[in-house]
Image 1 (cartoon, rainbow, N blue to C red):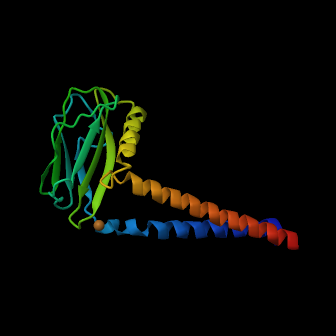
Image 2 (tube, rainbow, N blue to C red):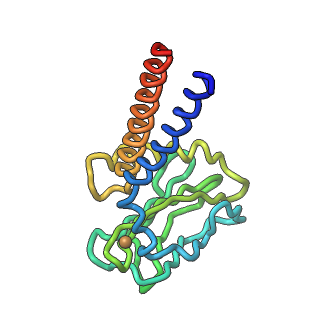
Amino acid sequence: MSSTTRRASRLSGAIAGAAVAALLLLSPTATAAAHDALLASDPAPDDVLGTTPDKITLTFSDAASTEPGATEFAAFDEECSPLASGEPVVDGNTVTQAISGPVEGAVLVQWKVVSSDGHPISDEYTFSVGEEGKVAAVEQCGESLAEQAEGSSEGFNAVPYAVGGALIFTAVGVVIAVAIVRGRRGATKE
Ligand SMILES: [Cu+2]
């Protein structure tokens, strides 16, 4: 086995190790299996509608919490203007948000509910009115919302994702660095 091959096998071992480390870091979210699931969205992701809908309805696999503040709902047009009108209404396993229109182009929908097991779940998607909108522009609204949520634990879970991502990158970086240092040491011995 040449030193290069050995180093390569060390590196692939390190990457596998980093993947395991990443999974371990993510294990708190592995309980997601117990969360309620989003069964349907109306409008659905990537729908292109002829007219602005007057509401957005999400259907979950179980009843969402009706505790004050448990449910958050936001909708933005391509200029990042908020479209949600009034508070989201939780009725059993459906959550409905009235929206103000008319709107042209992409609409970004962001939601958070507390699922029946007591854990918050959240996601986002886009649909369009008229013609397919500039989704990239709308995604920037999502970033600005995530920034707003940074100071708040009641945000759309953007912060845990960011922290988890940073931890994974750090873990992968450390493991690869260690592998490279070990590889160099091995090479100088030979
Ligand atoms: Cu859960």
